[in-house]
Image (cartoon, rainbow, N blue to C red; front, side, top):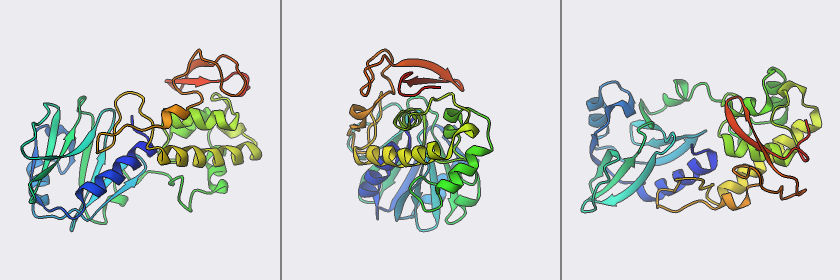
Length: 275
């Protein structure tokens, strides 16, 4: 599933390709993707004549803003946006098409059909699900060490499970949790509330640094991720642990191990991340 760096990369390219385009028509071929409103025709009709003014991000969600509405989109496992010309063939896994007045089309393709879209009147999206329960953004001013420490102190879950909780901090998934924990020297099974102040400070800094570096390199292409222009990310070349089970640790040379933590596959170095 795309995490913050991948979603941020999609956001940037999507904005470049669609800003100021006027929607002429919206066709939805898989109604279950549209979660709000329940009537798909209402979703399509509301967007006719609207101009895409901006594309933002909140956690792993993409927010497409028009004159009067905000589309809250989650890519889930395989969701992809792409801008095409009308004469280009439509892939069979394309389930939502936004037709623009200039003849171009924004197509949403999703092999697994897990992606979702919610339509809100502009300004209401942050106060309702799925965005209302999200925690702070890792690059925002309200993500402080004090706030982070307080949230971790209140849970006896493993630190990996806690970091995957989008109420504590948004945008982290399996890749960047494993990487941040390795760079912090923290074992993924450590109880979150057991972390000492210096460990929390280190983890806080490494989360921000890891995500920042990943955004700069366009995210990580592990399986099928590409941005809106079909380009892969390059941060996978920098990964220390994720996807590297059985390989040598880049820091100490010890063999990396894989365990299950909170139902998620987790790779770590038993030497650099002692429990």
